[in-house]
Image (cartoon, rainbow, N blue to C red; front, side, top):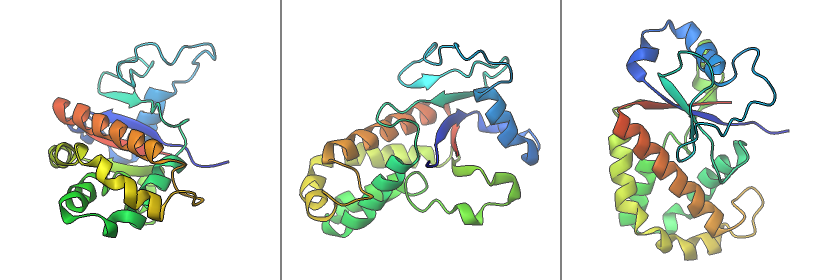
Amino acid sequence: MGMDLTLFMVDWGWLGAVPAESRIELLEDAAWPEGLDDSYDLSRGRAGGWLRPPGPGAAWCAEYAFSTTTGAHAPHARAGAAWGDLRLLVDASVREPMDTFLDGLLRNVDRASADRWHRHVLLACPPDVLPGKVRAWERLESRLEDLRAPFAAECEGWAGRPDTFEDFIALLREWGGVTAAAARRGWGLVGLY
């Protein structure tokens, strides 16, 4: 059994006003409120992958349901590892925006450095970082096909890497949409496991 990823778009100011030791529990309660009926349709309220948490008073966050994964963290980790494998094979005009875009989302998430209140946090991307990620994605999106040959050379068929180039690109595109949606709203991202 692997680790899951539950991704939230969060009103950073609102969450920042909550004592640090209560934030994770508050996010968990928003996504999985006590007494939630097993028959509750979590796809209700879905808008482009975003789910409004069913809990009352949760207008300060939304959960994202990745369509390219089953909620598992492994595809995200594999995509980050794939980028690590192929990044030196691509031109700097692609490498630099991809590094900016992925760092902190799919790469370099150091759970060991998290303090005891953040032990369930896979990523935290504050709102002030997201506009830079969106700009990087805009520079990168039209160049994704440039990654096909390096992906084939370094990642295709390797265990622990995305199964196909198309899987890799689909996940990147979802992250592009996620960062753009959060940036438009001026909110941040928090990923829990």
